[in-house]
Image (cartoon, rainbow, N blue to C red; front, side):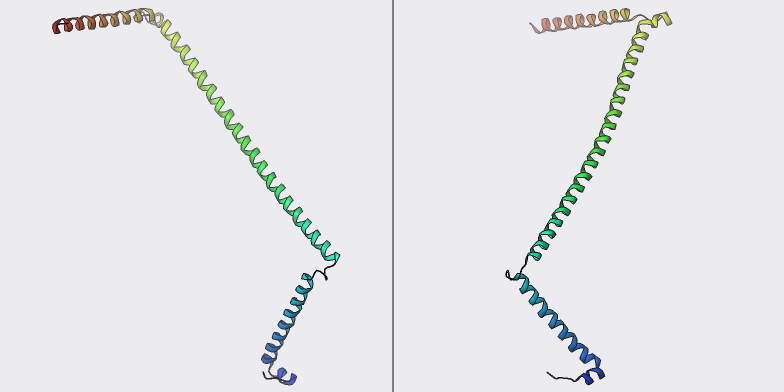
Length: 159
Protein backbone atom coordinates (compact mmCIF):
# COMPACT_ATOMS: atom_id res chain seq x y z
CA UNK A 1 0.00 0.00 0.00
CA UNK A 2 1.39 3.39 -0.97
CA UNK A 3 1.04 6.28 1.44
CA UNK A 4 0.53 9.74 0.01
CA UNK A 5 1.12 12.93 1.87
CA UNK A 6 -1.51 15.59 2.41
CA UNK A 7 0.18 17.82 -0.19
CA UNK A 8 0.04 15.01 -2.74
CA UNK A 9 -3.58 14.36 -1.91
CA UNK A 10 -4.41 18.01 -2.44
CA UNK A 11 -2.60 18.01 -5.80
CA UNK A 12 -4.34 14.81 -6.84
CA UNK A 13 -7.76 15.01 -5.20
CA UNK A 14 -9.11 11.85 -6.83
CA UNK A 15 -6.55 9.67 -5.00
CA UNK A 16 -7.09 11.24 -1.61
CA UNK A 17 -10.84 11.32 -1.97
CA UNK A 18 -11.00 7.62 -2.74
CA UNK A 19 -8.83 6.70 0.23
CA UNK A 20 -10.68 9.16 2.50
CA UNK A 21 -14.00 7.68 1.49
CA UNK A 22 -12.72 4.17 2.26
CA UNK A 23 -11.58 5.31 5.69
CA UNK A 24 -14.93 6.99 6.39
CA UNK A 25 -16.79 3.83 5.36
CA UNK A 26 -14.55 1.69 7.56
CA UNK A 27 -15.10 3.99 10.53
CA UNK A 28 -18.88 3.95 9.98
CA UNK A 29 -18.83 0.16 9.70
CA UNK A 30 -16.90 -0.17 12.97
CA UNK A 31 -19.24 2.28 14.72
CA UNK A 32 -22.29 0.33 13.52
CA UNK A 33 -20.75 -2.94 14.74
CA UNK A 34 -20.03 -1.36 18.11
CA UNK A 35 -23.59 -0.01 18.37
CA UNK A 36 -25.06 -3.37 17.42
CA UNK A 37 -22.90 -5.16 19.98
CA UNK A 38 -23.89 -2.57 22.54
CA UNK A 39 -27.60 -3.04 21.78
CA UNK A 40 -27.45 -6.83 21.83
CA UNK A 41 -25.52 -7.00 25.05
CA UNK A 42 -28.18 -7.28 27.80
CA UNK A 43 -25.91 -5.61 30.30
CA UNK A 44 -25.83 -2.44 28.18
CA UNK A 45 -29.60 -2.14 27.82
CA UNK A 46 -31.15 0.32 30.18
CA UNK A 47 -34.74 1.04 31.08
CA UNK A 48 -35.07 3.93 28.62
CA UNK A 49 -34.35 1.58 25.71
CA UNK A 50 -36.90 -0.91 27.01
CA UNK A 51 -39.51 1.80 27.57
CA UNK A 52 -38.87 3.20 24.12
CA UNK A 53 -39.31 -0.27 22.58
CA UNK A 54 -42.54 -0.80 24.52
CA UNK A 55 -43.89 2.58 23.39
CA UNK A 56 -43.02 1.74 19.78
CA UNK A 57 -44.86 -1.58 20.07
CA UNK A 58 -47.86 0.15 21.64
CA UNK A 59 -47.94 2.69 18.81
CA UNK A 60 -47.73 -0.06 16.18
CA UNK A 61 -50.50 -1.96 17.95
CA UNK A 62 -52.70 1.14 18.08
CA UNK A 63 -52.06 1.86 14.40
CA UNK A 64 -53.00 -1.72 13.57
CA UNK A 65 -56.20 -1.42 15.61
CA UNK A 66 -57.07 1.85 13.85
CA UNK A 67 -56.52 0.19 10.47
CA UNK A 68 -58.78 -2.70 11.49
CA UNK A 69 -61.47 -0.28 12.65
CA UNK A 70 -61.20 1.67 9.40
CA UNK A 71 -61.55 -1.53 7.35
CA UNK A 72 -64.53 -2.67 9.42
CA UNK A 73 -66.15 0.73 9.02
CA UNK A 74 -65.57 0.58 5.26
CA UNK A 75 -67.08 -2.91 5.10
CA UNK A 76 -70.11 -1.84 7.13
CA UNK A 77 -70.70 1.16 4.85
CA UNK A 78 -70.44 -1.12 1.81
CA UNK A 79 -72.87 -3.57 3.39
CA UNK A 80 -75.32 -0.75 4.17
CA UNK A 81 -75.09 0.42 0.56
CA UNK A 82 -75.73 -3.10 -0.74
CA UNK A 83 -78.65 -3.54 1.64
CA UNK A 84 -80.13 -0.22 0.49
CA UNK A 85 -79.79 -1.27 -3.16
CA UNK A 86 -81.36 -4.65 -2.36
CA UNK A 87 -84.32 -3.01 -0.62
CA UNK A 88 -84.86 -0.65 -3.57
CA UNK A 89 -84.74 -3.58 -6.00
CA UNK A 90 -87.16 -5.55 -3.81
CA UNK A 91 -89.62 -2.63 -3.73
CA UNK A 92 -89.42 -2.31 -7.52
CA UNK A 93 -90.05 -6.04 -7.94
CA UNK A 94 -93.01 -5.91 -5.55
CA UNK A 95 -94.44 -2.99 -7.51
CA UNK A 96 -94.04 -4.89 -10.77
CA UNK A 97 -95.70 -7.96 -9.28
CA UNK A 98 -98.64 -5.91 -7.99
CA UNK A 99 -98.98 -4.28 -11.40
CA UNK A 100 -99.02 -7.71 -13.11
CA UNK A 101 -101.62 -9.05 -10.68
CA UNK A 102 -103.78 -5.96 -11.12
CA UNK A 103 -103.50 -6.25 -14.90
CA UNK A 104 -104.43 -9.93 -14.74
CA UNK A 105 -107.48 -9.25 -12.53
CA UNK A 106 -108.58 -6.41 -14.80
CA UNK A 107 -108.14 -8.58 -17.88
CA UNK A 108 -110.17 -11.38 -16.31
CA UNK A 109 -112.91 -8.93 -15.35
CA UNK A 110 -113.03 -7.53 -18.88
CA UNK A 111 -113.13 -10.98 -20.43
CA UNK A 112 -115.86 -12.06 -18.03
CA UNK A 113 -117.89 -8.96 -18.81
CA UNK A 114 -117.42 -9.41 -22.54
CA UNK A 115 -118.33 -13.10 -22.48
CA UNK A 116 -121.44 -12.43 -20.39
CA UNK A 117 -122.65 -9.38 -22.30
CA UNK A 118 -121.56 -9.85 -25.91
CA UNK A 119 -125.01 -11.07 -26.96
CA UNK A 120 -126.42 -7.74 -25.74
CA UNK A 121 -123.99 -5.85 -27.97
CA UNK A 122 -124.73 -7.92 -31.06
CA UNK A 123 -127.69 -10.28 -31.31
CA UNK A 124 -125.90 -12.93 -33.46
CA UNK A 125 -123.31 -13.64 -30.76
CA UNK A 126 -124.53 -16.53 -28.59
CA UNK A 127 -124.24 -16.52 -24.79
CA UNK A 128 -121.59 -18.52 -22.99
CA UNK A 129 -124.13 -21.10 -21.82
CA UNK A 130 -125.36 -21.67 -25.38
CA UNK A 131 -121.82 -22.09 -26.68
CA UNK A 132 -120.93 -24.43 -23.84
CA UNK A 133 -124.05 -26.53 -24.44
CA UNK A 134 -123.19 -26.86 -28.14
CA UNK A 135 -119.60 -27.76 -27.32
CA UNK A 136 -120.66 -30.45 -24.81
CA UNK A 137 -123.13 -31.93 -27.30
CA UNK A 138 -120.47 -32.00 -30.02
CA UNK A 139 -117.93 -33.70 -27.73
CA UNK A 140 -120.51 -36.24 -26.52
CA UNK A 141 -121.33 -37.00 -30.17
CA UNK A 142 -117.64 -37.59 -30.94
CA UNK A 143 -117.33 -39.94 -27.97
CA UNK A 144 -120.45 -41.90 -29.02
CA UNK A 145 -119.14 -42.15 -32.58
CA UNK A 146 -115.74 -43.39 -31.35
CA UNK A 147 -117.51 -45.93 -29.12
CA UNK A 148 -119.57 -47.25 -32.02
CA UNK A 149 -116.51 -47.40 -34.28
CA UNK A 150 -114.56 -49.31 -31.65
CA UNK A 151 -117.49 -51.69 -31.07
CA UNK A 152 -117.78 -52.33 -34.82
CA UNK A 153 -114.02 -53.01 -35.16
CA UNK A 154 -114.12 -55.42 -32.21
CA UNK A 155 -117.07 -57.32 -33.75
CA UNK A 156 -115.24 -57.51 -37.09
CA UNK A 157 -112.13 -58.82 -35.31
CA UNK A 158 -114.18 -61.46 -33.51
CA UNK A 159 -114.24 -60.25 -29.95
